[in-house]
Length: 611
Image 1 (cartoon, helix red, strand yellow):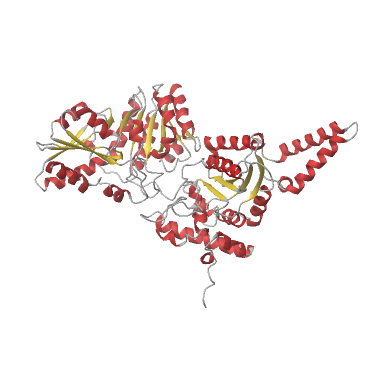
Image 2: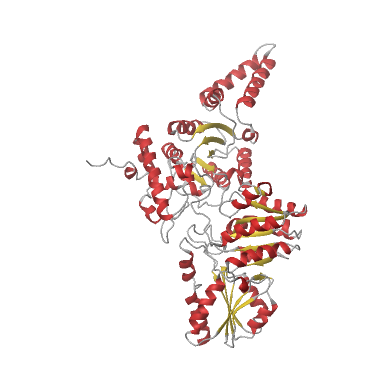
C-alpha cells in the first residue's frame, strides 16, 4: 500500500497553506517536526526553538501575504519552519554546509527573508523603520516582528518597544514565550477576559458605553470613573501587568501558540487596531521531540555540546577550579551558560553566577560595578556578541581600570553559523582599549594557566580568547606563565613565523613543510598578544622575513601591531582575515581558502623569499 502523500511536499509557497483544513494543518505540523529533527540530526543546527514555533509560523503565513507583508524573525534561529514554508525544503539537505543554506534568515536566499538576524533583540528596531517608511509611502503593508527565545531581555528590544509606542507605528509584535514567561498563571476568568479584550467589536462597543456613561445627567463623570476603575481593578487582578500598555503598546494574550486557529484570530484582531500591538503566545520549546522538551538547557541555543578536550572544556574546568581557590570570583553570562561552559560553575556556585539575559552591554557594565565592589568578575561570552558592548568595554571597564576578565569563546573563524558569528573583530577592538591585556592560548593547558594569570593581574582588564575548534594538548613542562613569549623553533634561518593563538600550531606545521625543503624557520607563540614581548620582537627582527598569522581581521590586528614595532628593521608580512563578510563553512576550509593553513603560510614564505 502506498504511503499517504506528504502535505509538506505540496507546500511550495505560503499561499498553499490556505487550502488546508485544520486537521490537515495538524498533520502538516507533525510532518514539519519530523523533517526538522531529521535535518538537524544530519547537519547540526537549532532544534528546540524551531520545534516550538511550528503552528505559530503556519498561522503567520496563512494570515499574512509574505513577502508583501513583512515577517521579521528575532532571533533568526527560530526561522527553520519559515524556510520550509517558503519553498526551501530541498535546501535543507545542505543546511549550514559550505555553499548551502544558512541557519538564519538570508536575504540572498529568499525574498521572504527581510533581515539576516542572528544577534538578538533587533527586530523591533527594523520594524519601527519599516513601518515609518511604509506609512510615508501609504502602501498599507503589514509588519509582524516575532520576538522570543529570551530576546525581550535585550536592551534594544525595550528601546524599540518604547519607540513603537511613542510613534504609534502599526506593527504587530508576536512575543513567542517558550519558557521565559511574562504572565501570571492563566485562570478561566482571565482567559475569558483575554478573549474579550482582543475582540475589536467588543472594544468599539466598550468605548461607546464609556462615552454614554460620561453623558449621564448629574452622575455621568462619576459613572464613567467607576467603570474605568472597575476595569483597572479587574485588569490588575487577572491580567499581566500593564507594562506594555504604559509604553503605548496594546497587549493581547496570552494565547496558545500551538493552536493555529487561535493565533490566526489573534493576528486578524490585532490588524483592526491602530498602533503597535503585542500578541503574547505561549509555546513549548522542543515540542513533539522528547529529548528537546525534557532538556531545555541543552536546547536553549543550539544542538552543540561541550566537547571534551576543547578550549571551552578547558575553560569550564579551570573556572570552577579558580572559583574554589578564590571566593571573590564571580561569573557572568548573557543567556548562554551552556555554550560558554559555565554550567559546571553555576552548579558549584549558584550564588556567584549571574545570567543577565541577552544584554551584553549591561553584562559588561555590571561586571565593572562588581569589580568596583571588590569582586573579580569573569564575563564569558562569544566573541561575536562582545562586539555589541565594545563601548562599555572601553569606557566602563577600561577607562575605570577595572580588573574584569573577558573570556571570549568562538573567537576567530567559527564556521557553520556564517558571517554573523565569526569572531574576527575582537583582536582589533580589544587591542585598542588602553591597558587591556590580551592572552591567546595555543593549547588546552595554556588556557587554564592564563585564567589563573589573569586573576593575578589586578591592574586593568584582561581578555582571553579562544576558538571553537579542538585544542592542542601539551606537556605540563611546556606550559609557561602565559605572559612570556615562547619559542616554538629556533635556528639561523631567515624566516620567522609568529602565530597568534591557534595559528601558532599552523605556523609550526608550515615550518615543518619548509624544513623538508631545506628552509629553516623560527616559530614564536606570543601568548600575550598585548603587550607584546620585547624579546620576541627583537628576535623576530633579526630575521630577514617575519610572517605573522592570526584568525582575526588583518587590518588593525596583532600582526599590524608587530609590524609597527619592527618594520623599520625587517620585512614583515601580515597574514590574517580580509575585511569582508565570510559565508558559513567548516573553519579549516575557510582558513585554507584565505591562505591561513600550513600550506598557505609556507607558500607565503616561499613567494617572499623568491621576491
